[in-house]
Image (cartoon, rainbow, N blue to C red):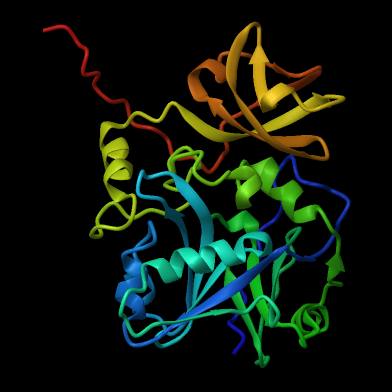
Length: 323
């Protein structure tokens, strides 16, 4: 059943301005179906977010990450509830098998079914330049969810391969639906939002460094889950020195920096995760990076800003204050 659309938010300052209406893009992502009598408690022990946020709704979406036992990010995901005791776990197609193995490893004797739907379902992003879409019809074999991270990311559509998604969405809008490959990644990077193993190399970063807390992907009040102890400790100490941040290039580098290291004035500021058009994404040391008006990325030049959706940080008392 198709969920009702509200307004789809506009692109921000640094987004691609060539598209003038809703943009639909097929993503290199798919879903794994997890279902069964014990599915809610099972997922609660695996993901960083609280699955019970979806319990009061027949359908819904939740951003979360799967961590290893050392608290490092393995995979980012959006969890969709499609009906009672049935959830879809979104991930990149290239890691669908490792994600399925990770899920099965913790199944033990629970009454859980884990099904790889890579050959049956596609995942789309629907992003927009300010046009409103309203839904008044139902569409079989297709689910539309508001992206649970930030409003500029628009909507996620999970549909069976047989569904012509563009035609179905076009019925809901007075605007022409465009298909423009690369728009979604450009939007993400301009906003400073990471996704997939390029931006979150498995076992490399901690969830707070990936802004999972700022993207509504972590519950600090739920019970234990895999990797919870270190995540909670880092949150309560309030010390997160590095985070994913957007890079706005005034001069693009001619080649990637060696080992992806971003070095400015002999100081290693962090790692480049990727570039799309004239924007990029980097895991950067916040205080050291923001001191500079511009930073060098190999032979390129970029400006770094805190994303507008980051919360305003409260001033904390320093533990090192002298008595």
